[in-house]
Length: 266
Image 1: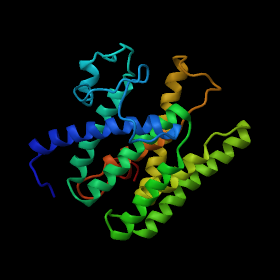
Image 2: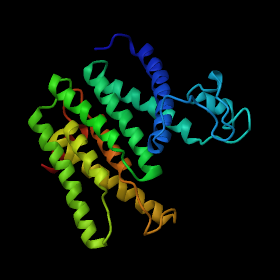
Image 3: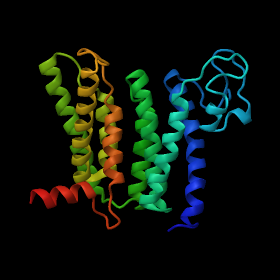
């Protein structure tokens, strides 16, 4: 159910999405350092000068300041604007697929959580337990009240399929390579994602995650941007596989990728 026409909802959600992206930048930076996400307010990390409201406009603020602090002229990471932009765009994706209803807010919260997990994992090679617990809490409440279109048994099976596959791959990688290949944080995240996806979508998300990671790693190694012994965060690929699986849902409850597969192969 949409309370406003798309011509109004899309720009409103773009603005709100970018604003949430600005908050996610704070979460991504501060949570791994065990800092408060509330205080102090946004400030330059070099001169500690608070960022003025007019300079703190999501996405636009970065370009208005030309990527530099107004006070000390030190540069800001361009990734801040990227996170704000990608959050805004993914907000629109969730809206266009799910409309405005209970499932919209649930999958939007999951999307924001995966954005935070992606960049924390890239920066620190960890998936904070707090993020996993938040996702688990959202999942359990959603299943209890029927806010998402998935049954308990399918959610539980999906959790075990997703997490179990990752755990198995981790054991095989440990045996063959003699070092950790899939972190336990990924396995715990898999429990949550599998619950949201169910069994069939979990298999799809796993396939997409490993396919995307293989492609990107191959390209990066071919371009000499990645060494053979480099540590690789897998959380971003799990997030990508999950979101693609959710965002390719058809208006009738199916999935475009799975429909193509079943039509082509059978």
